[in-house]
Image (cartoon, rainbow, N blue to C red; front, side, top):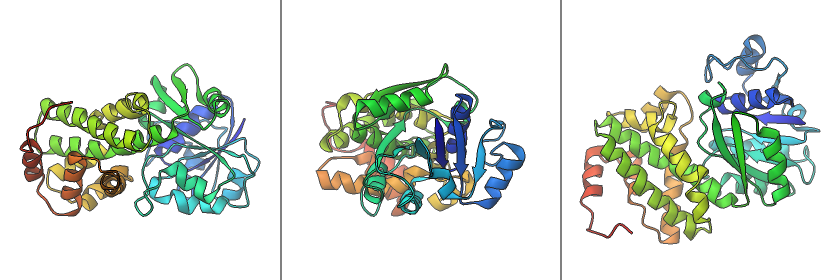
Length: 329
């Protein structure tokens, strides 16, 4: 198949390499001319995916029209804050029914829309799916066994995408629960910030296990209130992604949280991580959705207090631990 990829960061590059190695014709776009020049010269995303040499058949360009015109599938790997601005440029360039696969994670703060909803708002005639799961680019780029799920409105589209991406180290399941997949992929980043903050404060495995488990409870409460299926949230794009993002050395959200736990502001932590920390952008939106749907999300609220309201992390943790006594279920 002929595939265009929007976004040449770590995830876009890893997926471009996977798809090219699967035998597909790949064009990858970035708005950054220096980034494209680097990729053309070295066939390596030296800044964000160092050590992974990309398939030499991948074409790189700053021409978005060339990237999306005449493509069987378009993969959107742009960081969540830039999704709307990027896909606006596709109006008039892609046909009705165009398959678009969103692989970014987040909730748009201004509108509370998921990223698939954002794309559909800008390109209402297209066929938008989501691919998500525990899948760090650093490992996918090196061919480490990985399993994800693709969500589409119809089984046929899911199966097309499944066949395009799947190989002997990258296993793809299908689902029609787009809402569940997107919410799991967004909320887990906020919980991962909390897990990183606890690590930065010097807390232990007990603390992290508690944050993961109770964070999962918060994800399930909001997800089901918004129409997601419980089994989706308990699957790869929910629990699976939550575990890996809270524990992995590759997790930018966990790593940013660690720095915040050591005393940095979220701006300083993001500068240090040198990549978009999606959980920072999703934190406010997730809390606003919790209030909208009347859902209790104390960990998400604590993260917002630390990020945006100047609360000391240790004080936020004490408040979490001393909340009213409750039954677990």
